[in-house]
Length: 118
Length: 117
Image 1: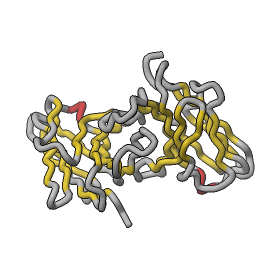
Image 2: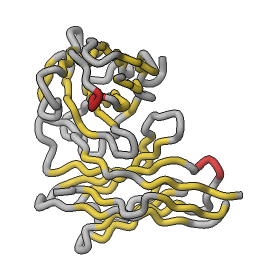
Image 3: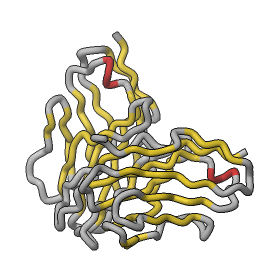
Image 4: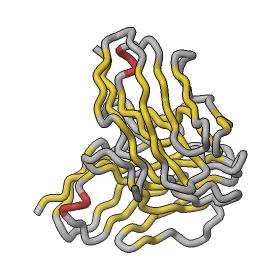
């Protein structure tokens, strides 16, 4: 069963506008973590933001915020004031359960390609 | 270097050839991961090292895939008798590996794009 679902293969947004990238997840664990990564054309994955399942407040990192709705099992990424450099693939990822052996084993979604237009 | 370094950046192999992909993690990082990313897909976990110990190899697709990290720093992913379905980008990631760090982020390299003809 698919654990992470990103239903938007592609999105576009006008520069300086906000955009929301959707992510839903499936887990039976009470403790888990959710990550968002950005992958530009250079290929490397760049960490953006993290949300723990027990965190009561939505995570924020600069222009990035995570709209975490636990009951709906969704963890949408909101990018405010889009910039041309935000054009890239965006991946939602999940770590299930408590750290087993002390490491973050991540499961990734299929990604959303974001294009920012001037 | 300051980041995770992978080499070669591109590798073309004939079906049946053996290949070796190298990863230089960030100095001092205890944890090292290998992921496989097929075209148009998200990365999929292959294997995990804590220092030189391979603690999880549950994602390796077959016994043709082998990974090592003999001195706890540089790692090599070897694929024997390559097949066309092995064509993908192979990403290496490292992290500090602090015990219990649930939000610890992974630092990724730019990957090796493997094409098997």
